[in-house]
Length: 115
Image (cartoon, rainbow, N blue to C red; front, side, top):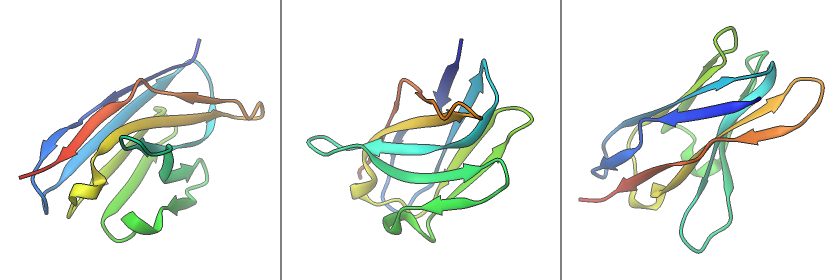
């Protein structure tokens, strides 16, 4: 049974920093990452990282957010720096099962950027 558990969300002031973490279990994964969904908007990619270390970032977070992963431990983290009010959203951890190409999602963690 695949399970993804997120932690680290909360309230942060504009310009501040926050770190999200996700622990996955139950399978072997080849891509892990973060998506987010703001009220009234569709879920969008934030950043992903493959088991080979290749990363992908949304243009809106490049230079501010950094994704890292430990595939031996099945953990992925997102370091969010210089956050903006438009970063406010529910952030979802994502993991894709290796060879089967099936995606799984965490329950989501709220990030609110406000003064």
